[in-house]
Image 1 (tube, rainbow, N blue to C red):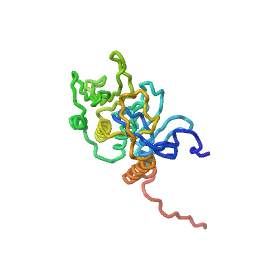
Image 2 (spheres, rainbow, N blue to C red):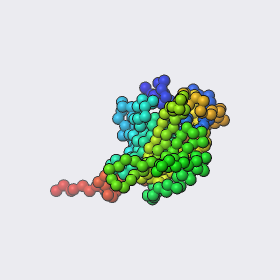
Image 3 (spheres, one colour):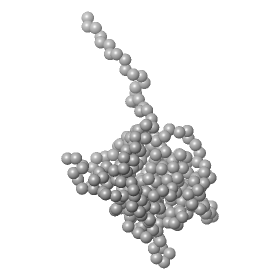
Image 4 (cartoon, one colour):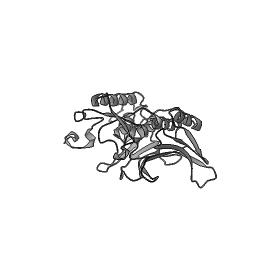
Length: 282
């Protein structure tokens, strides 16, 4: 039986089935928009040549880059917990890692993962450049001791560069995003968090900061945003129809297809096979 006969989120509404949705909303700030459809991230990587190693019957996604150097894992847990849903790291699990919570908008995660599909020379992260991106979007930089932080214009998100605990003398740094909304008596409700090593690819780090601080609203259907953001999220009816949004998604996949790197040859094969030779019978 086709999955289209099931009453399931896999059938839409944003990317595939659009006949059940008549309109979309533009919501801002984007960091309060809710997770969205994970295929915005995963389908792009698959079209870009990443392979799927997910286990049928288990609720997760396991993707591997074409050169087998990077892994992405999506394993949903209880959405109210601070557990990581998304993990991206080198296959040997050394040098760096990136973690994203379940309510992280997929468009913000894609700012990081999309950059991993492009073959670019390894560059060192320029911290000043990342702060410049945030400042240019109205996120003022603040200093708190040795930590560095920028606050979103609505004061519900903070981007910080913090020193991570280490057993070595050389300090290590991580970029962290934390999103929360005020409650009563000075308390706040946690929505989602992200943590990325400073040694992650520079282009991916820059893509994440740019996507996080981008003031452009995100498109969401009713029910895709968390109820905890009521009163802090601006929502207006979008002129973009669900069908048009689907076409935009397909155009995004076509762009990934055009930049797809050539597939590596099968293991053990160094040259194309030559013509077969039969041994003559005597």
